[in-house]
Image (tube, rainbow, N blue to C red; front, side, top):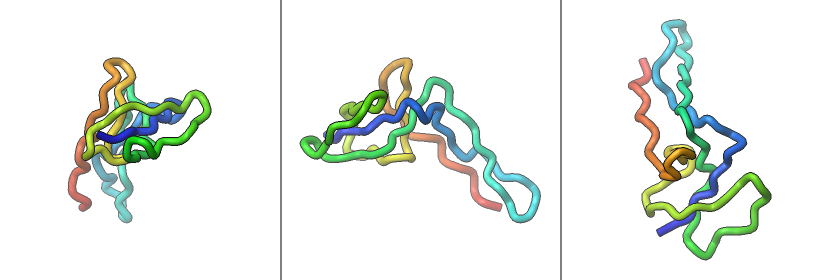
Length: 87
């Protein structure tokens, strides 16, 4: 078990949902409803004091910062969708 640092001031979390057709190809970002950024993940016991509105939540060992997001409706952490292949 680990702890995830949640940053609600950076909501909503975003993921790469596609690429522009222009060259160079640029990422198209899509927002995830009711989400917040997972800013950092540490082993239990290594968390540190944070100022509000930041807060810590328990999370699974495989959670990684910026690859997962925190859903502020059900208080769960989910994996962001995988980006499509770069053209």
